[in-house]
Image (tube, rainbow, N blue to C red):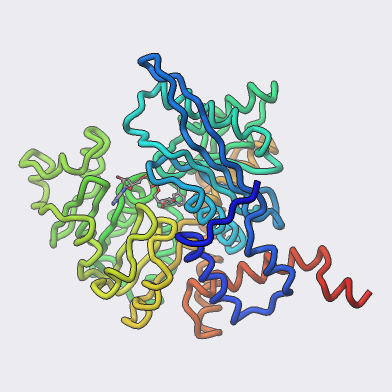
Length: 432
Ligand code: NAD
């Protein structure tokens, strides 16, 4: 089945591709391939709920392009998951894997639900049901799953286990982000936040940023946002605001991130930090909305929650000097133009959050070779790749006088285009 939404997030995401085309020479055939997702699957997942009732959930899996290798991408559990969103996320994964020069194409999956409304048993039945529905569409050499918003190592473990039950053999490499005891990799859980930190640390000296004098605001305090917050805090950056789906907290002097993380882990809500208890006494907090956090006058703004947070409606009010996109697609293409006009420099998702898929690649390699790496080896390999990709995009952007985002698409297009072209293009056949 091929479904191609004509408007919305995917249409907006495609504009980045069209923009980059001005700066790269690509065979027309390659472009024609890249404008369309390879395949899209839409499934209904029946789940027996704890109260005995039956509920059917809507799920998706999109394989956008597999020219450079099996498709790879996370699975999202969220009430707003739609085919349009999953397709856009699979599109971004295609370019991200190419920017990092990983031997993968782009894929993504999702289920439309509020995961907080389900019990753990219901979540397990749903996750296994999703794999039952998509098993013929995935595989370690075809399409590999990973965690995304509101999915975690335990859910990845259930998914791999269900795939093994169906295949009647152990196939660890079909899912990454698994628990260590099920063949996961050291460092995978922290990889997205750690990778984003490596990008910031590579860029900071070029921008003349000194940690102690650099203020940071982070929207989203989940896996990616909270790990990055800890890394920045340890390096001495002044994090003045953080938020989650319930709202945020602000302190001009800088927040004490480890105690906030402790509170969040024990209560699951940042709101718990608004109190007068021991954590609040560490530093004076003020409540701040997610909308206001984005408009703070800070050196670095980090959207680490969901897409479409900075749009035409609020881009004019953004006062940060630099934005590092940890979330996928937090800035629309129209907002990009406004931010550019205001002189705000954006470091794009396809670079900044690529640490996750890079360590997923390491996990896939380890599963297939049967040889497992130490945490130091993982960190060294990740550092090497994140620094190289950051330097590549920085220099390409300077050389061509384009944004770092466009540089990312140009580099990825060159790599994907070359792989498509070697299969034979129109020129090749016409000449023959
Ligand atoms: P997560 O589920 O661990 O955390 C999501 C966070 O966002 C939570 O703190 C949640 O409360 C917050 N949030 C949700 N809605 C919000 C809203 N409207 N305003 C503010 N905060 C809100 O998810 P994650 O894995 O940290 O993913 C966050 C982003 O990073 C997503 O865009 C995801 O695609 C991207 N990403 C994640 C990974 C990964 O390995 N986890 C890799 C690459 C990209």
